[in-house]
Image (cartoon, one colour):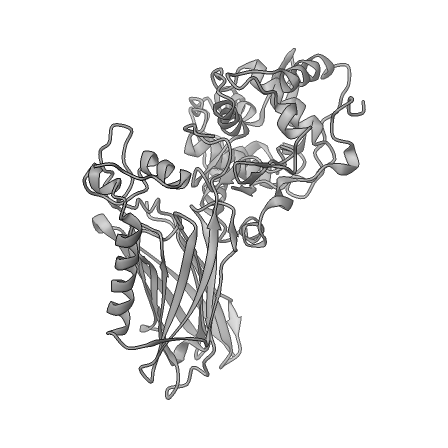
Length: 237
Length: 160
Length: 106
């Protein structure tokens, strides 16, 4: 399935990394002492820690997570599930531990650690029979005008990427590095947190974390970025 | 008192609380630029004890267009042999437009091998970043870089 | 729990200038921010970093609110002898964090 009319041709896609100054890029490249370093260290500790009533660690069942993050969000049993949700599925189902709240330090750290295992790999979301209905819904959301400013994602990120909005360059909005350390937040955060910032930008309301509509949009954004290299955890302004 | 908020950045800094502590009237003080310039001058005088500061020997690297003022990578290098007889004793980094002028003061000596320092600073607004080096012979040298600080788009709290 | 990362080369030649990178996990609350209702959020920052090499101070830094969150400091020292580099961060409200790294100098 190729990009529809108005969407960015595959060869012209650029990661937000390329819009950043060399100094900010250096922060992303420096894993050991970059701003996301503590999140990764926490994530590694959580990966090894025995949790819940079952008393098992992620490491007890999983040899590693290489190649996993580039396939999320995933369609399973008629629903689309993002990486954060999958981690909670394992936590509650396997570890018999309470789920972590969205945007909690633990969930972000473990998501960052898992995503990091796929750093450098191409994003691998496919348009197929299973994913099609969710991708169509996500694409529709991406192209839908919303909010008081009555803007769609596409209007900024397909039609006007590269131009400036209030002093910043508009990126193409590929989620190549989530969870990111956003300099504005001075913290690591998820794609859904970032999408909420977009909603504030266009004065639209947002649904609760993790609802299907948002995860469909996440799926579409990752499909739109298919083949681009994962940079997680990235640094972004 | 009528307040002249001349830049969008000042208004945003006010509502986000990035301006100096004190009365609301003081925060809207039309002389805030003058107050901060005076604070910077006082800080430099405290560092140098009133001795002259010459431009040179110091290389300050800061991105001229800052991606986000919350975290600005910067580095300072000073041309010095770093021997017991001739070395850099201290490197100070200051800003022109922050609520207080100091960023960091680093104390070195011949054991440093090289006079170099790198860190990440917060820079509230477009303006100058200054690095001052104090040498073992008592002289002071500096470098100044002007940076432009913009706000990211699409934030948590609105105002684009 | 205070967290610190220290990056020091494990080995160096005598006389070589080595780079030390250290990062402390800390929000560095400036003391200039206000809550939505206007209350000033009190300052809570790391104020000092001291590096000793086999017990001798080789580097010291004073940090101010204008340092970014999770402060990073990169500096150099001459590899003089095998031993331990100790990084000690201290700050407001009794904050203290220490981390050591060994270096073998040949």
